[in-house]
Length: 179
Image 1 (cartoon, helix red, strand yellow):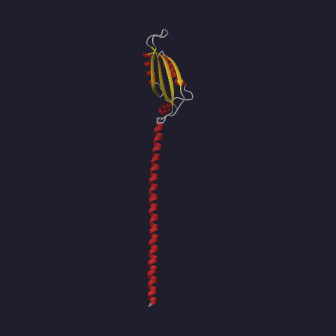
Image 2 (cartoon, rainbow, N blue to C red):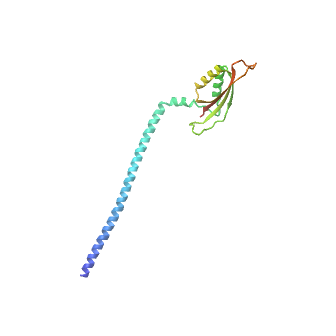
Image 3 (cartoon, rainbow, N blue to C red):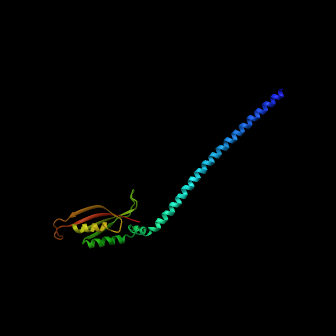
């Protein structure tokens, strides 16, 4: 009888151990399957996002090709900071057409925080009549360059014999954006 009890205890103990091991193995296998499934879902989402990005890039390339000529003309609105000669020639032509004397002081290019592009300042000192100055400013606003009129000071000459009445000096700070 003791042998019988020992056999039952061994069978019950073996069954409990076997069931415990089976539950333990199934639990960790289930955890691994869940983790692999989560990884698979993330991989599918990432693949879908990459596919969408590839489609967007292809669409952008098509749009860029169709507007390529406009992008080239867009580049022309920026001046070359190393050689701003075309912009200075434009200023000189505009001042001559407006019958103004022009002096130009160019500053070094700089990048101001918050601005989308680097810029370069030009201080323009013009001498002439006020209507001519207004004409010059209108030409500057219609310039083929991206410019910003920043500061203006007007000084009227007091009855000088060498300058006619209504003649003055205009100082204008112009900011241009550079490549």
